[in-house]
Image (cartoon, rainbow, N blue to C red; front, top):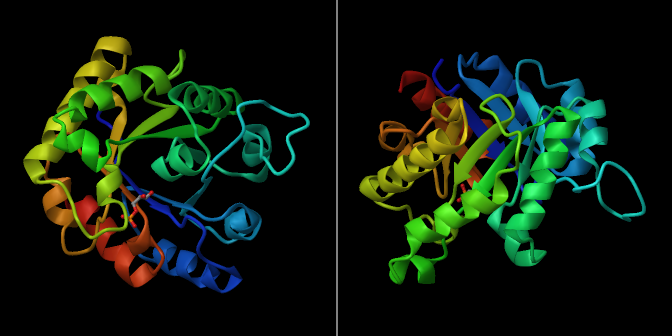
Length: 244
Ligand SMILES: O=C[C@H](O)COP(=O)(O)O
């Protein structure tokens, strides 16, 4: 088995009911890779209803299955609604909500218990890269964020350099390759099916750079922010992944 290709869109705090037609257009494009959109939580139900072949996921979940946690959403409920995936540990949540590797690990474990695929996000800051600490940071985040029981069927790893998110800047292809090779090595060492875990690159993926990024070894797809908001931008990225 090889990792399954995945084109994932993270809408972050963007989109509205009118954006449902984007999902229909993306579905109509007829991709052969897996295509996932993670909208803001209130849009999950209407989007799941009209998703067609597009998978719908959430952007976060709580580490517990239920309880007194006002404003939070359980992985159990997400699964009940029909979500297939949940993003955990996005750098915006690590920064805005002080999420640690241990918290991300607990959320990924909750996702697994509920039957969701956890997309576990990792990435270095610009200062960490400038200090030459990228590989150490990524290895530490992976070790601390990947729960026991992770498999290729229930986990996807997204490498997203913090400084490349929403900036229009991307690492060189060699820099992406270096990190993805490290991730693959660590996953193979830790998991029986580590060779089959899908590895996504994220950070300013656009129609114009997708083909070269998808040609990098061990890049099995992308986690796309801004360019996933419009079908006209996301469909060429999906097509580039299908062609890779
Ligand atoms: O989750 C997606 C990433 O943060 C990438 O966002 P971006 O494609 O807008 O740079």
